[in-house]
Length: 270
Length: 270
Image (cartoon, rainbow over all chains, first blue to last red; front, top):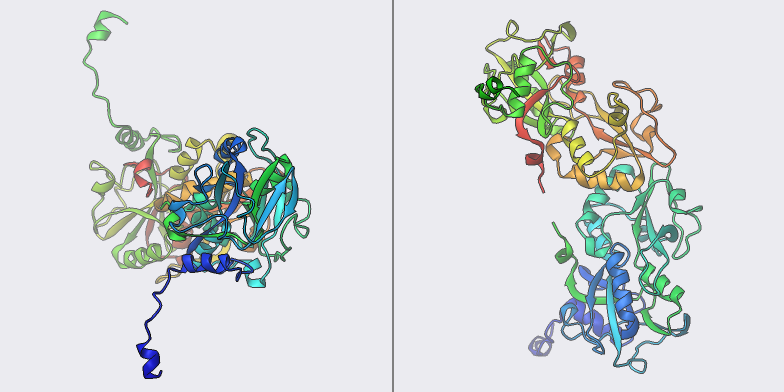
């Protein structure tokens, strides 16, 4: 190191989640998985106030697929509890804008789409519990393979609210039976990020006929000494919003989540 | 009711666990299941001091099949922590006396077998967690059918200690997958009575080739929408003691446990 470099005023080190949001805001992020390790990432759903109350009731009644970790005031793009500097209009890498159930735009910010009547919901994501599983030494197949988690529409009906209704979407991770038991224990500690599995073994009982053909994400192999373990998935609210064909909604783009200042470990109830 | 009956001096009402022990002591009990609901029942293992230390280490290293809920001083037939009045020599309905690995006697008390060098171990029993499962509305097949829980020798090796070694014995309860997940959560709260399951689904992975042929207890049907859920079983220490062919040991007779003053709810860690 040269003397002049040592004498330079150092940039104050930014908190990793804030840095991640600034990188997203600057258009430098292509996927948020692995970004700001330890910090909670969330699914995003934005709806007009006229629909937001029904959607809020939907989430309240379906807490496993739709655990709310944050909510904005009407018209406010800020959610101070998730990050004081946070601007929901710019801080995700990419958004999906829906009109009458059709995807009409996938912009890098939603400044031009923002309205004074919008309410933003941030919904827990499996990244948080996956970190806890990995920390306990449990292997996660899709992470090992570098692919997206396989997700399936089930025959488990969500409790409807207003126009919002539809089946629960689940994510699947193959595990050895003893690991599956440990995974139930670990993820039970994190109810605000989907919590314990909703099902294991016997996929046909929840309407899944072929594990090799997920409805979303990528298939992963299941070994002979493993069973499929199913968690409620944050894709559920997005699927429900699309199916409701509401006049207007905005969601995140898959895999491009909101990075918050909350830490995963803060979500543990035990 | 006649006047004279009403005037009779009432017997003071005995605490249910004490009453159960007195009934056992009086030879009036043919099985302890259902006796003194809410109170902890335990498996019994009595060994000479020369073997007790190794057995204690065995239990310490295999806490899921051998969770110790009480232990006597050398030569003492009392375990005040489990019941101040408790006499381990008389308070179980029936005992098994073992010499060199052979069952030599099944007496109703062990007063004539008692020695100054004996140490008594009381080991947690599945009755406690079954009560918790039933309280949460989870059906238990063998209880519904009025038969003994099916138990199986597995290929899971216990950690050996001194002469004590052998496979873990497990009990099996068929459950719907969502109930199995709930059962993991509920029984995880009770580590001192076997705790969470050790396995579920795929019985061949733990060396069980035919669920219809348990090694102990009775077979129960498994429905198409159920998976087998396996818990470590308190028969393990008894099987290990028999296999070790130790010079002298005393155990309880199957299904005839020690009723203690501890309450099941006191064992919950959460």
